[in-house]
Image (cartoon, rainbow, N blue to C red):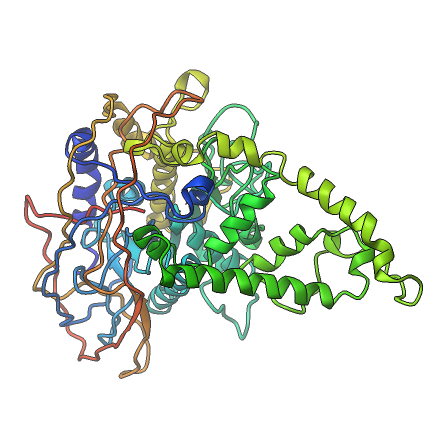
Length: 587
């Protein structure tokens, strides 16, 4: 049997017990993702990291097993928190080809496990499974890592859907993985049916999407975009998340990745904490946004590890030169740019976005108001007004830049011992003000509700009300939360669950012998260990000073795993033995 639910049960039930003593066993060594003076770059992707020597075990892909489930949650965690080839048993398809994923239990995440494993307690064994997507999960470069994550997530969902057409999906992402999940959900929701099918999966089979720290969030968005009650609950789940309708201020740090979710609108839970600059960055911080865009295209891992060396300096220079040349070419393509209101800083922001395509028509708000013949007036005649526009534009679009820098954005978002707002989602309950569950607990209760509907074969009911059993596991986790102050201690080296038996697999009806190319992180990379979420949130407006960030060992570039083809056989994967070490990683 594949996808042993007992592993998931054990992981979920044990999380609360493990989290109580976590802060007494581990020290957070945070690493900022760009120049320290502009700590807001921590909002781009990986927001903190702790490194420790990775442990490897001999893992062989020996057999493949096909087993379908009523619902599978696709989980994408943050920086360094990902299954790794050579240290984690990866899934294989029906023909022995490796897939870029691992079962929850073969890979474990202290952060994401409590959300994605919760449904296993309330459905029959074998009805539910959680799968972690393998992807580089680094910042060398951030954009390449996220793109690989999107590709791998789509591949795994496609393979499961082809083998198990009746399986429903939920998708969960946190931190860097939240960016991956947003992009995947937007693509699924905007698919057009072709030849009776979909390129990824049928959107109707996706029952819910959870995005924790949504960097593509638009200003003014509530937690449930596209829902009938965007501030209260997703469609089909009438348990209120909170009282009130005031959205979290600010917007995501990567506004170019934003947009609606098409046919998935109403099935989205996008959580953001005020003060988490990955999703609640103030508007009018144009210069900081430019730094963020540039950092997404650089090897930040090498820069933070080695500092400014000839190699890293060349990397910075190449990116800056490319952006500058793109800006000049963009201006040259607009004959009457001098007569328009667009500033050079606005051009730099537009062309520095990784998705910028030279020659594309600028957005309506960025185009010159009226095209004027070059013969009517010499370009230099517009120079005084253009210079004035540049000065005014620089001031207006950076009204909040200085306040953000002075607020110590690194500590505000990250903080020592996970006291920053990027970790609020596991401790943000406020029963006195109408918010009985944390964001993570609410997500777990919603997924449990969806899993029970999937097991019963019921269509998603947009008017249903959760039962007490749906919330039971989340309330128990909240009641057991330790409120002690975090204490920094040395960390233990993380390990991963491995075994000599064949990894459990998802089968596909692919033609025998067909290889599937995947992108997975190479073995031997350092992983990260998250702190326990069971801490009191820091006082509003006050964040403890951070110690000097520890230097992180940069993950190696992602590699392409050559698949192996074997004859399908059936095997049963045993549950991990008591006391077995697990991977403890996060972004």
